[in-house]
Image (tube, rainbow, N blue to C red; front, side):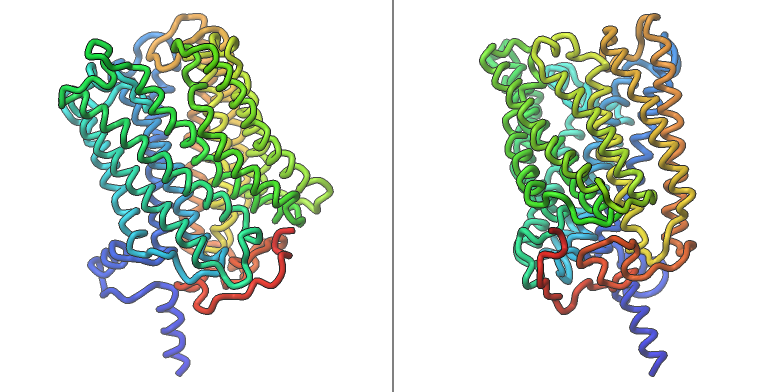
Length: 540
């Protein structure tokens, strides 16, 4: 009898039996509809893509180490900038947060699985093919797309290489995956919460993902429209973005940034959710101002649709429009400031300990705020005339995306990995990874602000001699940051292979919420019988 039971438990952990050997393994992962499996697939894809796009970033930085054309052809350099941007956004940050959502949301709301499991499987398996298609363009005659991830017309229409069409198709696939994933997340959160869990009792991570999913459904069709208009301009004789035919190149920027600015909030809102989970845990206090955090997240999402033209202050838009977008951009800093204030207030007088996830969360709060301030500098129209298209902008958004989104992802991985695997990671290695990353990220991106202020333009493979010192520092920082991520991978893989000490259901002393009531690792189906959520003690 005990053997039968033991087998059942085993069976529970490893998913349904699909046969033995390679075929069984392939079937298990290809056809899975389980939220944990699909979450794992998303996370592995994001990790692989992180190194893929990171290698491109290091190529860019190696070229900029000294002035002059050193390593790569300028056209290939432009392809690298394009790919680095596209893959980091659509192939790293978004799939990684979607993987987190897949793993965590059912466990956090007390559901057995996601609402639409087959759709879930499809939304993942589109992605590897989309990125394979995108990568294939590098091997076409004429090279891959070379006009930056923003795809500005006419560079992407009239002057673009033939492989651009493949990129358009792959962007469509990525967008489709995002929309389907979002529908699934919304359906899960609204329909499958445990009895007693009202919306205002949901963990912050679930809230941020609910709002992010609505954002994605609103903006992805806009991107699809923009790239379809590109395709039509390229092949069907239309002139959406061609002034000679009665179109307007600026129209492309409007349509693109109407997608693009909410998109950057899609990348950061789940990060806010993660930080709102980690900080209360290690401060051993409930999150300060939970309701205001929810309202602030919703306010950021709504305002994100009213700020797109701050990317276009120098394109000749009317003064009234410049003023509107300047004020709207400054206004969006208010709910973001509320969030930062609440995180700091949560830590205030808390019994804090500094495990690796907490270190990443604190670095996030500090460095993301720097990124926010440089964003406010860029929001001032007269100042923006100086900063526009300079390295200052690159410095700004990398501060928001690397110590922002990427640090939040790493913090989340360290936070939940013991729960997922049932084993603790190597804390010392985690701290090494943190300190190397936190120091090198500043060495890499802080000098960029100075380069921008001194007048160095973005997206150039070569530069004047006066910019050499700061570029050298930046490149050294980038290489240290890149190679220190190998510690992270080693730590993750050794934890997954169950090298570390076993952990109990709680994992972290101060952790609150339904996911910590399940054993570590959680069973294949999270909550077969839904738990009852009695009070709001989880968060207030």
